[in-house]
Amino acid sequence: MSTYQVGYFIGSLSSTSINRVLSKALIRLAPDDLEFTEIPIGDLPLYSPDFDSDYPPEARALKEAIGASEALMFVTPEYNRSIPGALKNAIDWASRPWGENSFEHIPAAVVGASIGQIGTAVAQQSLRGVLSYCNARQMTAPEAYIQFSEEVFGPDGEVHREDTETFLRDFMREFRDHVERVLTVLPR
Ligand SMILES: Cc1cc2nc3c(=O)[nH]c(=O)nc-3n(C[C@H](O)[C@H](O)[C@H](O)COP(=O)(O)O)c2cc1C
Image (cartoon, rainbow, N blue to C red; front, side, top):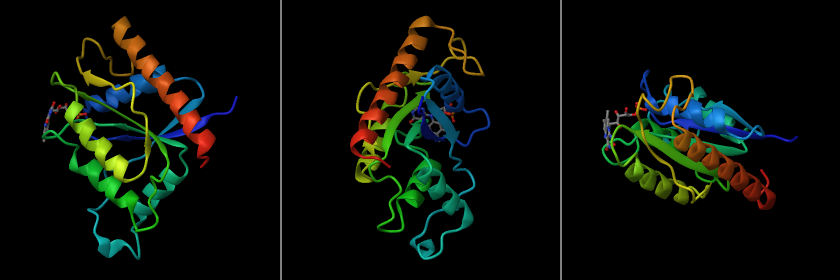
């Protein structure tokens, strides 16, 4: 069985991130032919075009990690109705230098958890706009806006509600199909 290498971003730098907990559930429920590697963003300096001629090691590692991925998954909180600055900073690094946009044609999925009822819907819209401009090939449906509860999500990827588990499993199966479709016409 051939596998697809999926790099994933956690938009939160929090040591107790609920989005990291969600990512564990998503990875656990994903089809077996998806292999996941986290792409860390916490040590990146703030992007400046001054670096374009000589990227620092953290930013080179970021671009190499995306280059080694066949698809990307973004698991992000909503901060003030948008995405956290750390995630936007990572995207800005990866989209540059001009002409070396790491997101060109890469299959991608966007998902997130919030303690609030709208479950990162506004952040995801914001992220989708950014990724559109970066020419990533996003899965448009299904969408997944997760209201986090410790009663539903265990710390190691357990999901204690059957309908939530089924929904997340379907989401990941759709993502796998999306990745396959995109890579069929746009091989990396
Ligand atoms: C700076 C900041 C802004 C926030 N803004 C929002 C928001 O716009 N919408 C929302 O639903 N929750 C918001 N929250 C609450 C987050 O949903 C909550 O802190 C969540 O745990 C963040 O995800 P994480 O645990 O993965 O870091 C905000 C939290 C912070 C720290």
